[in-house]
Length: 124
Image (cartoon, rainbow, N blue to C red; front, side):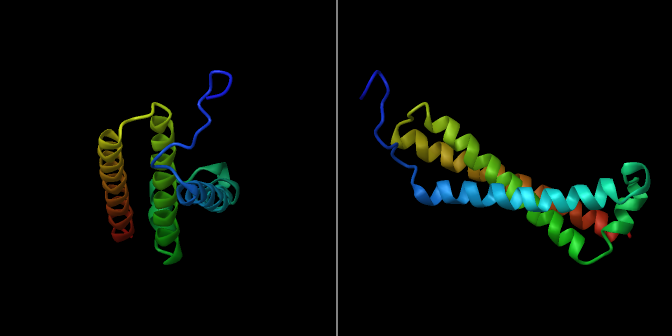
């Protein structure tokens, strides 16, 4: 402890998770740029209608890109939330609960979002 700050490494958080956060952040930026260009800069009026979205999802790469975007965003958000909760210095038992809950929430969000992409794709 130095100057009132605990500078020791937090248990349960290592370089691997830090690298995944950085990598997912970069991938989010990349896919977000593609998303913004295609959905808002190329389209007349700057906004796709529902019918436009359904037609757009008929291109085979679009649903795949959107699901990857979903996975990157949800994964990045869950790792970021975990980092915030780690600042509270939870016990190892509580950390296991936090990891389990965040994984469950993340997987549920990804499954639901993927289901929506499939539904929209099938409507075309």
